[in-house]
Length: 314
Length: 314
Image 1 (cartoon, each protein chain N blue to C red):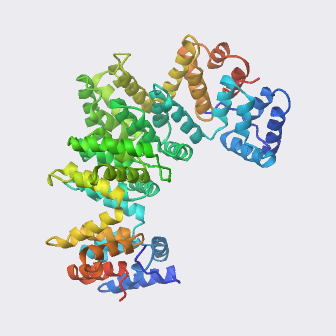
Image 2: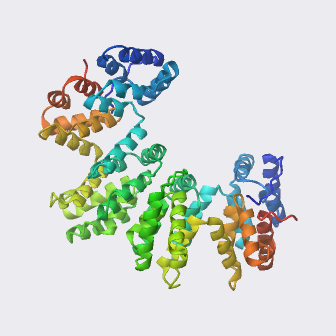
Image 3: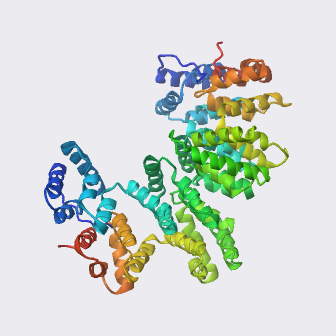
């Protein structure tokens, strides 16, 4: 379930006017920006952008970028975009880094639905005049490239039909490869990148039933091995995305110096989806609420926006 | 340009009635079937199927399958389907063969537009409850699998922006790999499966300018090497699909015993697209018209349908 709190009646025109007022003159009224945008869903935010452009002949996103700064600006920018377009931006930023953020690519390709991933690929092309897989392939190499390109190119079957025979035989194939430490085996990549998520869950369950341990446990090892880390993230995103997101939040907060990029990314991308469930998992795992943890680790307008998206009452 | 000849005024109801009449009672009126379906475009054929189902509570396709037989039945069945659904069927038949028809997979993934290929992937899932790439991966192996899975999963950028610098450097990468006979080099597969068709044309042109010969010429060699054959087909489909189709037609007719599957496939899939251009190429290359060649090699209702689709006046 979502965390954001959207009023029943929304006037897009009044919102556009309120944002204009917040940006005009000396100084910016960040609180006003949060109180509007932090309580609007993706469709409404898009309508507000269109209304704003109509009324004032200027691009709301560009205006906000020029008014705001730092983590707050980044979070507002990510939040205001259409979800598919936002994922395209996140993917592009991750790819273009000097050492690409493989787990962001994995996250986008494995936790979104097949149709959502397709929308991201469309949005990516519209923005960057390249295909997503083209840019991933051009900026990665070796086994990691094979895995990532297959994952972003997948258009998985999204139905409920499962083949138990296939689950059995592929659990065996995975176990053989893992046992022999052939983590880059082409069968592992084939199975993870082409099978439906329901089918993969059946396969992972079968793996655990047959071998008494999960495949991710069997993949723990050299923490410096980038491919192995990417492979583990892939399986965790496919098998239990909410649990995966809880862990990303936990790590982003726990480390010395908060990882704002990861924190913002998960809150912004899940606030309209399943952040309520992720918050529950977080509380269970950490014995402290996510709201509290975020409040403690962040400050100012950035903190206020995150808490609003987390659904915390003012 | 298309070859089929569609009248300006079409009554979908009258068509459904005419088809019912052609199927009713003893014997079937194949000529009537051809004179209706052979002169209707994809949208009209779909409307006729819906109207027929409404009027007679039976599936027109199933009825035709039970009335017709042999190459004629196969051609009518292929023709009546929606283009994306037809490609899904063609791909599935090709994959499920004891020795899969790799060139059909290449043809579908490389001669259709990115959006058309996406529609095929959707249609495939709706029909077979698997993704296309999943079935291709499960029925092929080795380098051929790597190439085919990448090709069917591609959602290429379809715009006009070309990067000349990339064309230069990738023409060089391709030439190095081809020169060293490393035909399965992962860079070859990356370039062919992720770059846009416009970009690839620039790269192939650069290759020819730099080395005085086309890349396909440089790939000629061991005719028994299945991977190399598939690679050549890929480049030909991407670079000049009409020329590729002309050659498929030429080979299907020239060999001892016509290859009806290939002949039907090309005529049925291109009749509403570019079969007129392909006919011109055929005439230029063979000094005999495609209509004449088809008429000489086929017979009966099958011949009558193909010639109708080729736009030959009765």
